Image 1 (cartoon, helix red, strand yellow):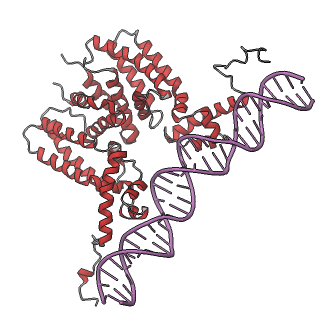
Image 2 (tube, rainbow over the protein chains, first blue to last red; image 1 turned 60 degrees about the vertical axis):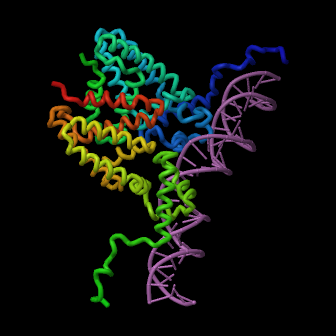
Image 3 (spheres, each protein chain N blue to C red; image 1 turned 45 degrees about the vertical axis):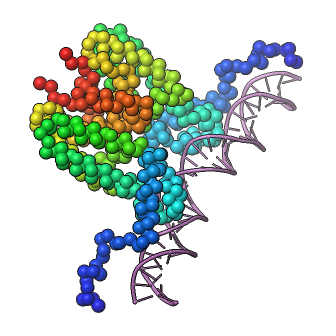
Length: 199
Length: 199
DNA sequence: TATGATTCGGAGCAGTGCTCCGGATCATAA
DNA sequence: TTATGATCCGGAGCACTGCTCCGAATCATA
């Protein structure tokens, strides 16, 4: 039988999950979304497995690390943000486009407590599953920044990482002290004012 | 004996620890300082007890909560910062005094990883042992802010909590991404620029 | 030196992340 | 339809965490 069907026996790159596996994967994701919303990105994985009526091993097989699970939860949001940046890149108002994108980014980071920290961690950790999709979004956003700088609206001595870090830092403030949530827009305006180029 | 010496027999507010207790307390603090420097504010308390050659119960008796231990580690720094704010309050340059204080605050928060988060937590948690000493420092700093605002150098629509949150957020950035440590002063300048009053 | 209050130390409980593998489940071929 | 074998599941188990509790050791005092 060695020569029978070498091609069909070849390692499949996307192995078409078995029916039960597919079901479990989706249940885990659905439950994870709820639990992470409740407990933040540091939610108990055991709890997620329990509430998904799935063994702990099953969860770890589908999502080997916590970041892998987060990535599955967030990929859609990242792609949406990247697309948003792309769309805003066609806009005629560079500064306003950047502001609109950052508002979106900061608002998105508020979805899960601890998300800002997770995103910051991807800056240095190239191995993180979150790194790729997050970096893609950051690079798309980089265009908006450069355009606003070229238009003379944003000071030239900042880069995309600076702005990304500041945006996450603002999200973090609300994470830590929910009582400051009402100040978020105000603090954002202050930071934007600091980023503005002076003549 | 009721009338003998009611005062000396009265409940002692600071119960003069026993000799061995005093020794242990100091050893724990010394070790904790090292371990927290290594592992951050989330350091393993068991590890601290082990390295202090002390039982876990002993550690918990002297410091019932993690915050209590942190408070003991930080009280001196808080007092120093409060005194610094007081001293700078006499200065003739309100804006420069505020900047100097904030630089000191941010630099201090860099001592332990996670410290910025711990300080932010005290804003809402009045029960935290850190709350009192931290609030004292904040109020001392409040004067510096008001003076800079009265001098027309800082915009009037921010309060002490806003500035405190922004300062901690800057410390947090370095916490999360040590690679951005070199940008800290730059990011601080940007935020200060945002806080500056425009004519 | 004996007594009694203080303090110590770590066993124990419930939780966490993560690994590993015997057994159940599914797809497929007969 | 049934048997076979690859795939996937589930949870016991390990090492760690924070925290409590109480018998035993230690200290101060009479």
